[in-house]
Length: 167
Length: 167
DNA sequence: GGAATTGGGACAGTCATATTGACATATCTT
DNA sequence: AAGATATGTCAATATGACTGTCCCAATTCC
Image (tube, rainbow over all chains, first blue to last red; front, side, top):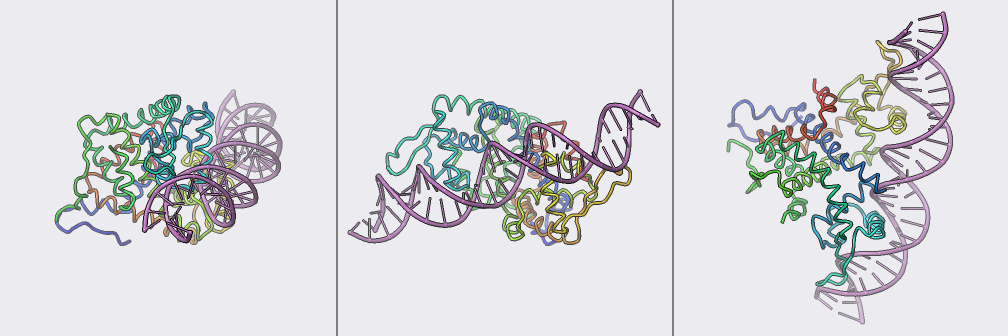
């Protein structure tokens, strides 16, 4: 097991956190933490007859109103055929609306309707409940560490895409 | 020189770390971090003709050799019909073996064959590469925060199940 | 000892979400 | 005018989940 070891200087504690058990602990917590979070909105989605794929699309459209279909595709990392069905359904239900791009008229800019905003807000409230509770329980300094490890998991090439979600 | 150097300006969680933007940041990083991690072994799985569901089963059987089918079901949080197909395939390929429980002879205790261990080790190496790099980049104190927030996401009732994976 | 419960397995049908491949149209770039 | 890009659509397929039902063997309860 060859792992990158940061540097020789810091005493004792620093090398230990790359042991297999520590790695497995991180994998498992990431798995169960992620699963627990996304399970929150399931009841609401079921009641609407929507799935998690619809939620992901709603989430990013809410986060970046006016994003183009191609940007959403890159965020979701699925094929346009897969997204097509989801987007069509969301539009048929009046949750999402399209507008033709102003700079590039080939683009279709997506945004939520008032109805879509209401649903997304309700879904978000479920995620928020989990996340806010976890933040509060762990404390602010833990949150910084949480973010930094997760950023480290994302391939550098993908980070600009993720960071662009922040205003 | 003493500590792994984080990226230029690691965005710190602000004092108002419960604001909507901070919550959304956590949701997004958790989403992309999780997705990035589990994408690592995909090429290997494809080459074997296996899917992520097989990997999850292999992972937990490797982690807890001799666990019963019911325990695996609780970890994966799926139905036994869903697990049934996965487990059958893994056994047909000679990656997983069953033994009758010693205390309770109704139980089927699962473990990896030598072949299964070899495959799981290769799959784990992929996960490890991501996670070790993220740990090294973020630094040890970040890892503690990472764990603590993730633990906070897991409903208290489920935590014993997760913690029991640690020896 | 008999009844109820539990652990595991199996069959059948369905659904949600993803895939590949091919093709079409409008628009932008050069 | 030619080529690239953004989007949409049709068709077929795969994966991984679901519900519902039935079954057997072993354990536990009374």
